[in-house]
Length: 420
Ligand code: SF4
Image (cartoon, rainbow, N blue to C red):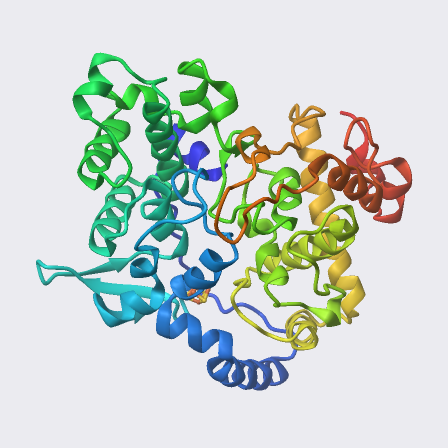
């Protein structure tokens, strides 16, 4: 993704600024809408939970339903897991909140550890990645490990997944060279994890095993079936065995196992969007949920195009009014969702032109084994049937996974669909 591209160019950030005002078609209407929506958003229940407890507010629920992975997706339960939750953080190390520019929710965390220095606190993915995923239940240690990745400019999901796989391979006796034995890597060992993050960042010592991510580590170790990834991107911490729809989200996301292309676990836990046709579905569902997953992807794709945070619980009708007052266009809700659908297909077409091949919409092999305990015990989503149903719903060819001519015509993408 973008991180790999920027890393290859030694680029850490892009900053832009300007003095011109952004033209708004109906400034008064937009300003009134914005202030009402922000007022309502501030008092929305989900916003309050995010402000009080951060994205870690969901950790207890995700644990209960088996959505939160432990020990690199191998365990269904972990002793002490409640000590890493958002509410626990609020009661212990939380020192304040932070927000992206202009956001009234403020899900960001500021924490203070034993040195008294205020620092960024971890969000859900980093908490789980450096916490239960590695068998660690110490919030201070998790904070420091996530902070270390931030300072190196490394993604916490990819790094913690890769380290989780390393721990699993040591446990299995696959990584058993002298250097691995000397480290004595084991679940819950935050000190060894810290050493490995430094090695990984510099590509030195054991870092040479880790620096290219989980897929490369598994291949190098001679155990390619052990990496939990899709299209080379490590999974976010929402296990499809606890949230079946995530199997399709990860498989069909344009850049691999990304949760931000469709946070379907929220739908399965009750956050539906009936007004745009995203209804409740069984978290242990099968092919019958494919249409609902596709619909949520289209909706979230629209939000991503609008640069709207997925945590902002703004009614669809208000988003429609915001867009129309800002642009002067007259979008219906359905036309807006079609913008999301079209961009989803555009990314598919771009991937096809860049060499995506059939079979890359996949389900990680380690997750074909059911967990023995916890909220996801005994369930594995019927992935092949789900993917077949999804291609059918999307109007994609079963063999190539690319949009059919009819689908491209319906979306007005015939010229984009032509081969160069
Ligand atoms: S924009 Fe989203 S991620 Fe940023 S502070 Fe607000 S709720 Fe959190």
